[in-house]
Amino acid sequence: MTVVYWLAYGLLAAGALLSLVRLARGPSLLDRVVATDTLLVIIAAGLAVHAALERDPTVVPVLVVVSLLAFVGSVSVARYIGGMMLRSPKNEPADQPAGEVPR
Amino acid sequence: MNDISSVGDVVAVVLLLIGSFLCLTAGLGVLRFPDVLTRMHAGTKPQVLGFLLIMLGGAIRLQGWSTTWMLLLVAAFQMLTAPVSAHMISRVAYRRRHVRRDLLLVDDLRSGEARDSVYRGDEPADAPPEEPGRALVESRREDEVHRDDGAQREDGADRERPS
Image (cartoon, each protein chain N blue to C red):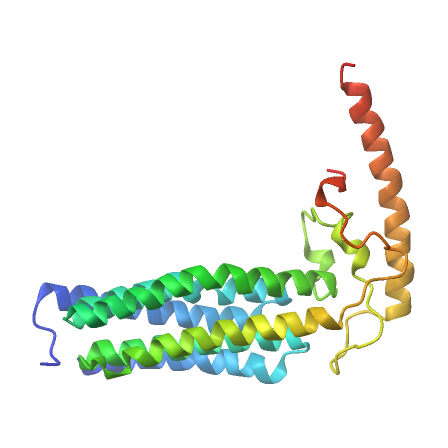
């Protein structure tokens, strides 16, 4: 049992550390968004592993909150970066249907 | 109570270990891959498969219907929201030229959405991969090249079409 504990938490911690390094080093904002998303998923997975190994269902509602938070955070930052992006002036038909793209 | 006593416990522990291993691979991929799209490709592996495996292991090991339903809710929510956030992040990444285009083999959006990838005004504090002026010039050149290309293809399509 101890071996399982160490192995599971070790793998999760290694993954979290690697994505944390990417979060610190990431050259652009979107890299940090992706790294934050991965980090939150790994944290939720760690909570679930704790709940499963200890047979302790008290942290299960926290899982719902963490996964919801990850979604809301990444989508809002992505929309914020997309809002920074203005269209170039020669692209006047703003709502061009996608069917006009030559394939 | 915490021991591994039955077959179900062994299965649950194996599922938990596989899920943890997928989290490690996600960290590796997020650190090692070259651009946003490939990092997201690696990072969404545990987001669906690893998370589902860990939820399954937890549902086997935590007996009781209320926790099982809650874990099922979390898994369904994750499967519902992962494509949405991935779509939004990758769309913004493509338009803001955070993609290593020299590593792409197929680029279906090149003549379509790449046209509005030139950004002006609010630039993020982190350095964009290309200069705005050079990106503008390059995108205009790409537009012209692809407009010609598209016109030729449309002609070809008209010729092929029996009228």
